[in-house]
Structure formats: C-alpha cells, structure tokens
Length: 152
Image (cartoon, rainbow, N blue to C red; front, side, top):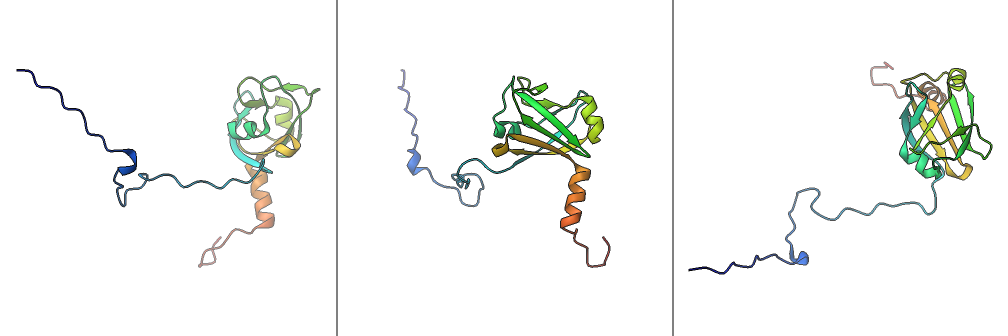
C-alpha cells in the first residue's frame, strides 16, 4: 500500500511568532542618513611596499574610477590627491591610489604606515594623514583625559 505524501504546513510570514529576547530576530532599525553627499568621508589604509593605499569607501565617495588622472602633493605627514585631467598619476582599475616613492619620502610616509584617509567629495580631494599628524592635531585641540590618580 502506498501512502500519499502529506503537504508541509508553513505558517504565513505575517503569522510567524516573534522570539522575545533573541537579538537579530526582528527587522533592523532604519539608519538615518543626511541628505545629499557627506562633507567628509573617513577611512583607514595601510601603505604597502609599492606605495599603494586603498580604502573602498573613501574612493567610492569621490566617484573615482580606473583611468582618472590625479595630481598629488605632499607636506610633512600629509598627502593630498586631487582629480585633474593633467594629473601625473592614474587611478588603477581597483580602488586604490599609488603614492610615488619621491612623494612618500617628502611627506615621511613609509611602507606599512597606517594612514587616516579623508575624502572630501565637494572638493574632489583625498587626504592621507599619518597617525603622528593626527595625534599632534588631537593633542593641540583636545587634551587627553587623565585618570583619577593624576597619571596621564
């Protein structure tokens, strides 16, 4: 004798019981986002031995694509990249920029250094700051808190 298969019973999505106290079971809360493009988008990158530094978020915020030309300038601990038709550096197909060796030496960037990247879409500019520059700027404007014992 052959029995007929029983159809599965699947409750409707709207009747699915909610589990109380189990994180991640409900719908995620919507995130607020400012209208238009943000003024500055931050990210972190590490300079490799070839001078490449990458952060998808900052480069995507600028809308830079492979083949775009960049002009790079440097100062002590800071590198600035701007998109310009006559730029000497080309953005590769992957989302990173290459800082030439002479420019890295001029601004004190070395392979392995981590940098704070600040993309300013309104100015079509990306700045890379060494953590020494960031620490100096922070300590000049916001003193680090001390613990109760007076130690820093």
